[in-house]
Length: 341
Ligand SMILES: *Cc1c(COP(=O)(O)O)cnc(C)c1O
Image 1 (cartoon, protein in one colour):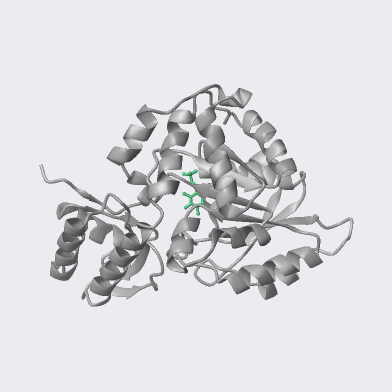
Image 2: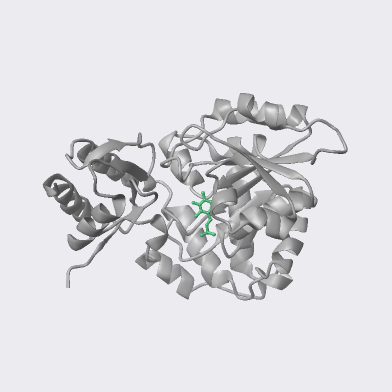
């Protein structure tokens, strides 16, 4: 059987050999009691990396985002985010379900929003109006095709939040893709965001796990919310070991994934069956198909050739590169992209 090339998402990664070894050798304890040494090490390592005071390890990025929202808000308040933001679009109504808040969404530019767009959405003090409490940004922007925020834009949004007494959370599921692509210093994020969520299970290649970072008081409350949401894990050090290994060994190599994504985009750009490709900045390639056949038809054609891809709309397809997509896989895929018609 031909091995299929997995381009649907960077969540499909298998643990690397070094990662498996780290997991096998992990020292563990009961993390709900704060006694798992590997979880504690991971949390301290990540907090230091971003110059945040503290961190808490959770099962998923959805949970870290929703815990952040629940700790930052009270029921009846409003959360501002982009209309395709993961916190709103892909988290099963968590903002309403878990925090009793409502989302005020705005259409961004490839997933990014700007302070001028946020300003008019901030409600005045008036008993009729929900209190605006929180702004959530996403970097990289998933539905924006892996686009990245500029530091300048994020700083301006923070200044607006400060002026209006709003809290600013970053869904940084793929923050390391942005950091590597734009050669940023992770510590700069602590000066902009009150809280930050980071996925270890995307391009970093860990089997599961996300981190939520913030100041000590916030993380203290986040631990209680994690318990309430059912995310308190016991000997979680086996997973934390994978995450720690990923942070220490799999960050710089993200550049290879970005190069591969650029090569896919170039090939797609000159394929007859592709109408247009969103600009590629990181490891996500989103493109629109040409002609009368829907995206699902082309997903099927690619699948017959061994490439798994995902339709993100009736006309758009997504390909994501990660550590499970080899140089050989890319060469094969480039050939198939050129041959389809
Ligand atoms: C994947 C992802 C998450 C979290 O997803 P989980 O599957 O719950 O870990 C959050 N935000 C963005 C932008 C993502 O792509």
